[in-house]
Amino acid sequence: MKPMWMLLNTGVIAALFAVSGCSSDTQQEAAYDVAKYEVTTHQVSFGSVPMVSHVPGSVVPDQQARIASRLMGYIRSIPVEVGQSVKRGDLLFSIDPQDIQSQISQARAGYLQAQAALENAKADFERFSQLYKEESVSRQQFDGIRLQYSVAQENLAAAKAGLEQAESQLNYANVRAPFDGVIVRKMAVAGDLAAPGNPVVIIENLKSLSVEAEVSQDLYAQLQVGDTAMVMVDGQKEPLVAEIYSLVSAANPRTRGHNLKLSLPEVNNVNSGTFARIEFKRGERQTLLIPESAVVNRSGIEGVFVVTADNYVQFRMVRIGMTKNGQYEVQAGLDMDEVIVTSNNQTLVNGDQVILTSANSETGA
Image 1 (cartoon, rainbow, N blue to C red):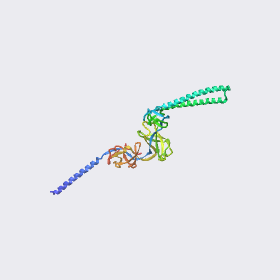
Image 2: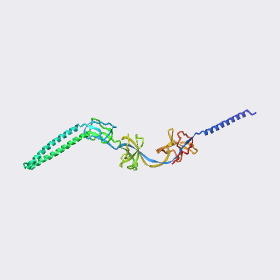
Image 3: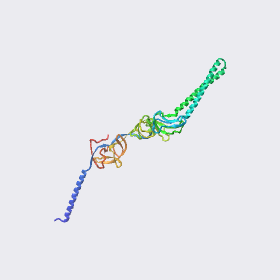
Image 4: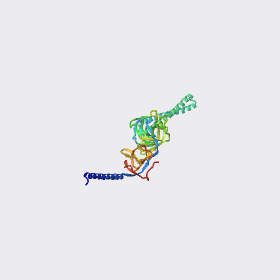
């Protein structure tokens, strides 16, 4: 009969073997339960991206008119409002014509007086002409009457010109739009005194717009009239292609920059003064490019899943640069020829095993 301690040791050893066997089986089962995902991949490679310079600018109208009155007088009415579209010839404002009509009356009275004086001078000239032929008056007397007749003719011509000028002033009492546009500012109201040189309204043609900007000396040296640039205007979903039509060679003495203007295509719902971002292309450079589909976000961190040699994945944080044709520029975080996951990567975590679907796998160019 075996001692009790030997029986106890035998039971303990058996139990340990049983636990060890179960643990080994559990580890094997866990190893076989590792998640595997079918993914497509991309080999990181170099590509070319444009070298660009971004410059702020603003939208300006090609046609802007500060409409003022040619007459001195009180404004009788301004039938337009800010933001209102007007056509060429539409009434913008009118001046009280009372002063003008008084001037016309005075000019007409002067004209009638000159006309009467001319008739008298003509009658005297004709009478003295006959007397001079009959030698009843001297040559000196005849020349004096002839001079008076000539002066009367000149006075009538001057009076007629004055009347016509006074009547023409009446046409300027009603001020009309010089071109199709939009009222962008009213600088007076009915009852204000209008004077030559003081604008009453400002009108702009919003169908013909440009972008004005100031560029550095280095960028100015690379630009020419006729070059194009991409312009993103606030309120527009798509960038616009603009062409440089004005380059000012003289630099701003304070900023040392150069002013330029780019013509915009005809667009709707864009007003003068709108902020614009101009993108000038300055050649190309080589950089690492990856598809947009490879980038995932984990807790606010952008990164990609890199495939290891034994087909496991590791999350790698990357710094993203510019976007070009569905590809991201990688500024840091990846090396040349590394393989990254481009599909089925939103649920991946570190350590997952992947199955590369060779039919859909992407390789770098």
